[in-house]
Image 1 (cartoon, one colour):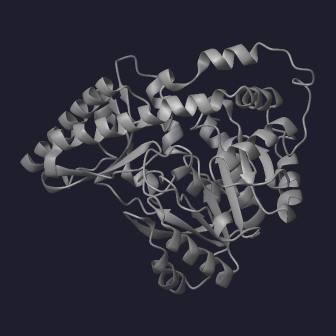
Image 2 (cartoon, rainbow, N blue to C red):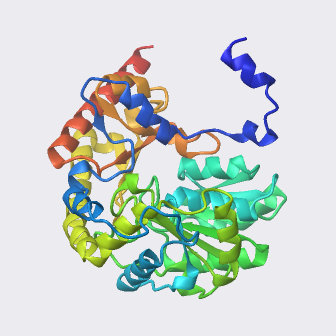
Image 3 (cartoon, rainbow, N blue to C red):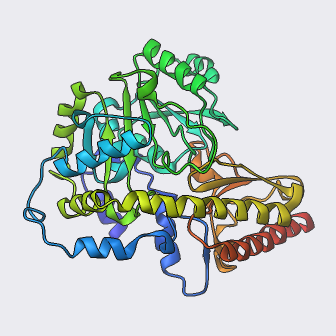
Length: 409
């Protein structure tokens, strides 16, 4: 019996039929098998040159009593104290009884779906949006309702008609309000206020995913959902150190009303008992030493430089044949193909692009319906400016070649 038929014979849970995996995470495995030079615009991660390895190594070499023991499920008190200080410093204060430390933001998303989504429940997501969030909701049996976005993020006023057409009110609304993944857009305050009103009307929960909020290059900070509606139990906010420090740490946190933290702790205890205690102490000690402020002061101007370099390279190379978004922070540009490139299928082109030495995530990966075939996500955070130029050149070669072959067919 081969491996596939063995799996089919197993008494698998019904929910496994909803497991769709992650195009983004799979790209890491795909690229690992290639030996030629590839400019990596795919994964949303800081460049290796922007991770403070020496300081992290220095701190990780210290011995701290209890560091290798089990920890409190809600998180190490020393780290929670630093998280509260971080939010205070960046203008969106919280409190220690609102924080549950998680294994990255993804565990926060999983817990939120575990708490609020039953099979068949309607979950509103942005289109395009973070593919792993869609996969998480689907794994709990959700029905996804994709809502449109524009240059200001989620088009909140479109939701009532979409919900009416769907024939059911949503249990959960998932959004990325700041420097959205993949588009880089930011939702203005009036749309956030309107979304809170709709959540109240529908008895829905807003899952506010904000990995990039402190990575602002320019512009005015928008108020958080918690600022607009203090102590509202309908707001579940997930955060992470993956983007602001290093992704391999797998340390994040949930910020919620204290009345639901016991449920979150119980859900987490059924997963992993506690987030990695050594990693929590590493992040906590890094912050206590003042290194995080120093780190952010160094990398934010560099991210802005990389964004500017990528936008300039795209404009010079593609002209009116491709239009890029202009984020005020975060990691990503969304590139929409126009004119002679408009019929290029970015998903079908991924293998050719990798062969040509450039990696991106295609538009359909960010849609529940496989839309956005003439668009793609580019991460500007990972590469130095000269490397960005080379990656855009390789991308141009692939796209125009594909357009030419299509035109000749």
